[in-house]
Length: 426
Ligand SMILES: *Cc1c(COP(=O)(O)O)cnc(C)c1O
Image (cartoon, rainbow, N blue to C red):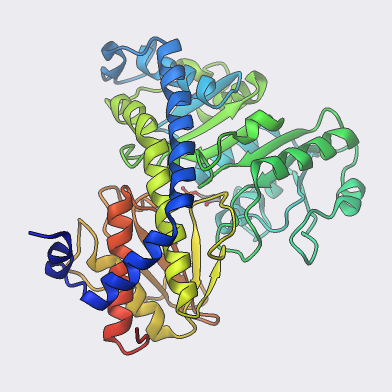
């Protein structure tokens, strides 16, 4: 049986497949560069695991207080080594990216301190953490003052106003690497390095934290390689490799990680407690898989950009731009387009492929939201998923794919549904 018959059996028409294959052919060079990065990062992770002498005893479960959890402590050593930090906190008790960011911020700031975002508005969920939107328990309630300097029109840093915003009270500077659900560009690690160097030239002892969500292993270097005091992220995104069922990480300066550990557990306890509950193997193995998984997701994002740009839709990043995270926005222009796209992603999933996503009024959003995901881990966005609010410009955000082949099927299926709905003609 031929490969095209397999696609046909899954519901992909000959026309859609042919269109996709032509685009895939044109991407050979870019895919090669992605594979080379994955190879580099695989060596980085292997070296860290070997240096930390990872052994099968580290996969054993601990319960209760989790004193002397060798697996947990060694995993943190591996993260510190792989991301070139002095220390790390990598825990299932960090329940999400937002939680990890909250712990990193609230532990390293004190009443009266100022927090500065020199890259505009942070990710939605952080608005309540910081108190940009009124919220019980926010940093604002604890007397932390927030300042923000927006990016310039062209998406670059507004150095002049950043200089003015940094003062004797500025304690921590938060830099979000990925654009998240905004239209600004995602920053490269080297751009982040320039920003950090500038901030430290104005105030040498200011702490620079990078929200590293969706960025891990996309490049060969991480923000810790260019001066970040802390990087923070979620294990159900890139570094969990699709295997971690929960978790977050904070890697960086020993003093920063130590502060975070006192906030996560309790002053005096810090990193000494926190049972790993049998999750260690999935954390180790997920990190091990992550460079390859991220490569698959990146290929999917680039493939999607090229498919939809060729069909005349606006895509961010565009078909040829260099990539610094795994998110792809596609502006479909109509509610019907968004629904068809998401139904295709859903229909291609290994889990819940038989359900059909519908827009719904999700709490916290001002328009109905449509979401497609058929994931092994609930909410995992390193797995193939797409979502977006049903309002102009009618854009879907697409990300993930544990393997390139699955991401490819997802995009072909999205196109198939668009064709069937009469939105696109090939
Ligand atoms: C996903 C994300 C977060 C929040 O992570 P959750 O695990 O969803 O809480 C924060 N910042 C950025 C840039 C993200 O992409």
